[in-house]
Image 1 (spheres, rainbow, N blue to C red):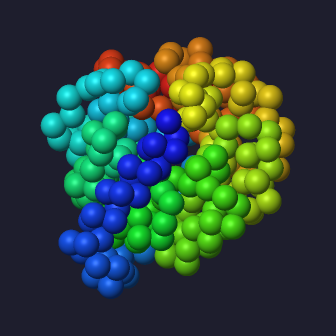
Image 2: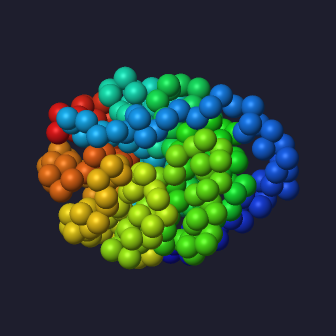
Length: 256
């Protein structure tokens, strides 16, 4: 599944590049105001930080929510206390778009993450041109040399990379990279199976000073408490927010 998702995203990226060459997107990216410091926004605090996600669908659950105005949802997230907003831009299985990201960027003043299956620099340029402050780099999808190259390019653009792992070995690769923001995804993107105990098993491998983000398997406040007790500085949540009352759900997490 992960290989299919990455291949589809790269195919879509190549199609967009035919319409908008690298030079044009690069100029748009450089014309943007500097990226917001996501590390400062997500720095450890007395309570959990929340990265709240704009998410319409997923391969594992199908359609989740009709989100006609992602900017309205994102504004609610910011008003409710989210530290950052994640926007899924993958078109085929998650039904997102760069247009969603651009709309959200105009509506909020907190950092915005482009959540996408990234495998080339053009996608990172697109993210900056659309106003993203962070991009997702999935360790399982990238050979180490390519991961290092994309991580370095992200930093050159003044952005932050959320480096996502799903095993001991992948956490080690993220740490070796020098990542300052490491996510541990309870969902294996190869099989889409959940391992709710994964974060607790690998969190100690992430050095002090690196921000630890727990991803997936967050349904209610007990899940946030479990992650917090295991050492999470932040949680990334989508499904629970878009399938219920986003503001009430978000605020129930923020006291943890």
